[in-house]
Image (cartoon, rainbow, N blue to C red; front, side, top):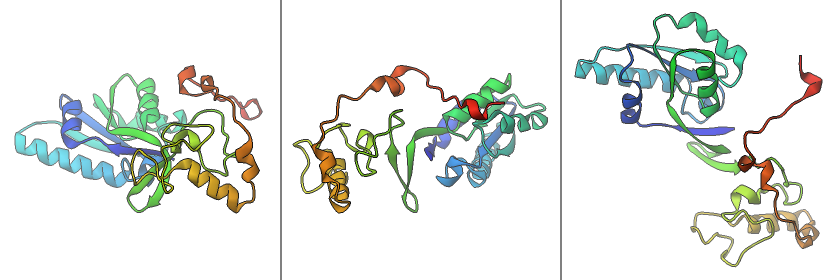
Length: 221
């Protein structure tokens, strides 16, 4: 899932303070799971802004809305009937959702979150990056451990000389991805995979290659 964290109240205040009628729009997908932009967070933020502005004598009306997903046009279209008088939208989705809402409506749209990475939960309240969205998955060669994002140097052949006792030289709380790969391949009796020299990665398929697109002709309408 996409992991994001909420901007500070002070940052959000600066972004939306000029609105006459502000709509805060949450998303029920990834940002709900990581507790950054779901219904609970939207209502807490709305209450915090109302209280802050009431104490400051600042007059802005705040309304809230929730969408199942902000990254799909059909869900974003559901906002239309709720937008009367709204002159600013604070999107509590990832950066994709912010852009879809901005493309759909001639209203100023600002982000309430900082989109961080594609990852997952390791324990309650802790999420970690697992995927670098590199466009050419090689997890079949590494026992399901991604060296692109979990190795601090994104090495395709490892480990480097900086790892010690299974930890990365970057910090003692960072696992060496290649130590994890070794242990996984050893457990699965596939250490032979580590003997194959992997070529230089083709980064043109990653973010450096410009905006990417996936087309599935078999499901297009």
